[in-house]
Image (cartoon, rainbow, N blue to C red; front, top):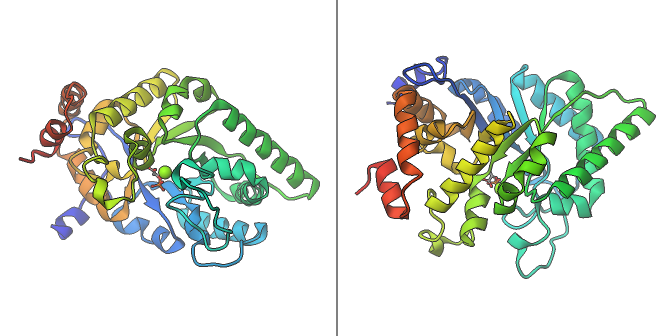
Length: 320
Ligand code: PEP
Ligand code: MG
């Protein structure tokens, strides 16, 4: 099977009737970047920068981060490279940052909230990324955004970064900007944010957690935290429809995209891009190449009408 999948490596990700989607990878280390070519990934749809800080007790400075992103860009050789700004907090604890004591960390200072409360960390990272963008294309996305005000506050910080770089006479490039849609509020407020965005990426891991009010890390909540549910499917559909209306490219980078049986459903719902684990990439490509776009559309049309979690999963996975 593995050999058979490897023959797909350099073939396009398209349905039997030639509807194309981009198939990118979720990556958490430089080592993984060097393996993109092994599976023929078209680029990176989610670079989780927390991993850069996982095994260190000191925060890397701007120069260190700049070299790190330059090394990554070099390996990317012009392919799509999507960096998520630091997503600190809750399930992503970092040894180099003093842990926050909070009753509900998943509902606390995390993602972009942490960045806005501790702007120096964000500024250091963004300055390094802006400088690296002088050497190749970079898409930047922000985790845990709920509101347009947060987005505007981040854009103000980015303007400040550019002014600092000009003053310091350091060259920098332009970035494309996106958000991770991973809270119900982000979906409900999406229309006010889309005009300012180049792309969005649906983060179904957190979107499921916050929609179902079920801790993604709690092993006893597997039925309350289903990988596929009617509620989350509706939010995905609303997000895709709104993005299409505003002609903003829409990606999905949660674990859901890595499920070969679900990928055709997402294609039928109108997703432009899937970002998946390296280990699932060829299986997902195979699933998309084995189905027609007409069938994907029919799958999506039927699935969105299903009201029950179990029925939805049986329909998509053919499980009994
Ligand atoms: C998500 O929340 O779906 C996501 C892609 O990000 P992470 O799993 O890193 O929170
Ligand atoms: Mg997330």
